[in-house]
Image (cartoon, rainbow, N blue to C red; front, side, top):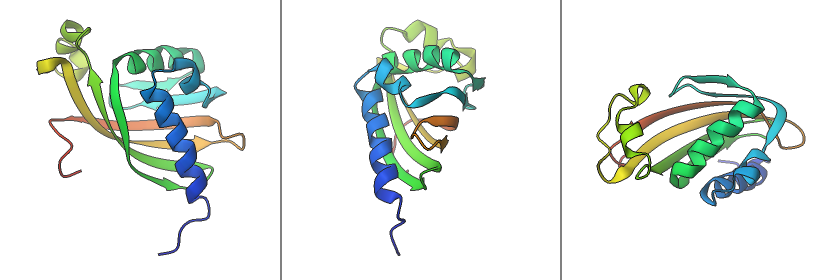
Length: 145
């Protein structure tokens, strides 16, 4: 199978974004988004967030992120689908998360939550995210992904 001509570019771009999340750099992660971005995380009902709203969302996510890994990345320079695994460490937020109605009153033994997901992302010519749709599900483990 032939390699898509944009594969190296989209893989490197996505890796920089993943590293920004794993390094807990809110400013670096936010630098990937255009000023007029529309961001939706359908798994938790956060739809059409503007950049100021997205800043609060990213801050909360990064403060709890333990590790994010790439499963696959596909697409071209203007639109990508990124499959990922993420582990959240909610030791500090244990009570809040365990009782979160959006998450269905989960047992969060040890404070770790695992999630699999996909981000469908539209990019502008400056490599800034203009629209993003996240779809995710909590799982017990990443086996069989």
